[in-house]
Image (cartoon, rainbow, N blue to C red):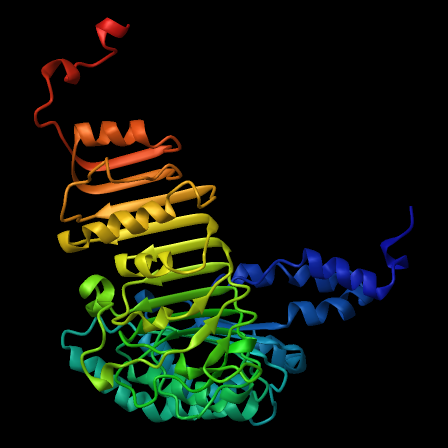
Length: 463
């Protein structure tokens, strides 16, 4: 058998790439486990260095209990070996106020910005959850942030200057965090024209007119009160859209499709779509499908195409059905998930979707006025014509009794009912739903049930 050293460098690189453990953010040992790769021989060291040192991390050691403010990092090792040019991904996780203060005060020195330019960094992941719950007065935390604001802005500007190649941003912080605003807004607007991916758990105030034409992943919390909800975004390049806190009258006007005709937006590569609307818009005329009452509420109508969509999730309800107006989906989807919105169920019932592999519907307080819509839409999605392998429905707070005679759910495989359900209704459901593998009821009522039906064990007449 030949020696592994006889293999070509490209083959060795391929072997090491496949067997290199993925760096897990926050778990230093996941990076340390890579170090033995570069100690085998000179060839492995030369090939393994880019794999080992592509990730740089800074995070808390949580030694506040012993009065020790520290963080764990491999930055010093990278600087000492002059390997900054190998770094592709930067992870920063600082959730202690003292640690954040010390870090910001020494950021230039920590990264060696005066002597090194981290020009090859492509992804920046930042988690900043300052622990303000220790303060007896909430305003203390606000004052802390005001004092740290200039340092945070200086650090954000230093990243923009010294890491000009960033194309992926992942930002996570508390919503009530002015430092997070400064950091997120500075980075998002500075790198907007070159981003492939942007993920932020805090609303960003965009000041740029548009994102770069190559954006593929959009994962954002929106601020309905901002002057500019979103910049213009190229619909054709997107593979994944997750939007949270979407205002009730959201419109597709923020997306453009240069290769399509006017009034048509083609998400030609989109595979995952999730829209979580603001909760206050729920249950307004079954998701507010009534026409807008004022001119300012009116949503622009577009013909929207999703030719490759596989996963669709809608949480809560839009005020107007115009967001679904003249949309075209694939006839088959892998997964559909609808939460807290019987109106979205009704809107999609009228779409061109014919089948799917998995469907999940979670209802919340469906009013008596929407009873007909409930049976019509659920019968459509859980009926025999929609071929699927798994389908789950959770009913929470129905304002009317289930009428087993009106439901047609032969493809339903799992049913959860929060609240009261009559024993006879549950028994009828089990008899009528042939594929039902699981049923759970929060409160099973035995009103008007003959005593013999409550006996444990088999019926003596049928034993």
